[in-house]
Image 1 (tube, rainbow, N blue to C red):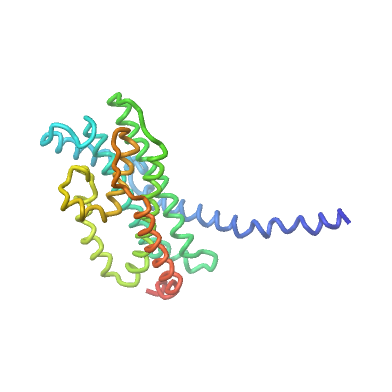
Image 2 (cartoon, helix red, strand yellow):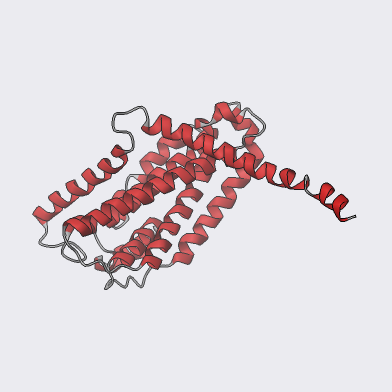
Length: 272
């Protein structure tokens, strides 16, 4: 009986693991395609993913060091602007990549085994890992070059990255439907998000703003994400105004709404 039981039970494992392995292969293939198309066509490839934010941080540091005696936190201009500029670009890039995932992978979505969830997950995984790597290299490089004392709170930094990723994915998921169903929304969104560069705390601290400005800026989730990262990098920065629950709550509403719209109109979007 035991031998017969083993014979009948052993073939079940491949069937249970089949869909999971198939999904992993699909995600890996989509990620390889994205790497080839995004970084494989230009000289330097992945190097530009590091060079571009470095140049942005250097430019901000040079410009503001000529106008200000010291940054909003600490004494190092590159570190202050890196902790603002890098999470902001991570939010913009990740939300934009998720928003265009259906259009980007439309040729593969014609196959029954590939879904819009696969297309979104592949872009989320690849671009999240890329931005985390860039952030670690740039900020770590600043600490090394300027011989700064390495006193950081990794738990706070991890929470900041989680806030950025969750909010960016939620915004991108809703925009994935809106930009595909209504192409004019993409242009409108680009216009609407331009003020975020000035309103997200890249150049200033929320705590140093007038009360009237604080009452408005507090409702910007990106500001909470950037301030949370700075709280992890600067041990003396308290930033008691940060509310992760606010960011995650807004993200949950946008994500659920976006997924419902995609699930209901997914096939129609592929025909556009």
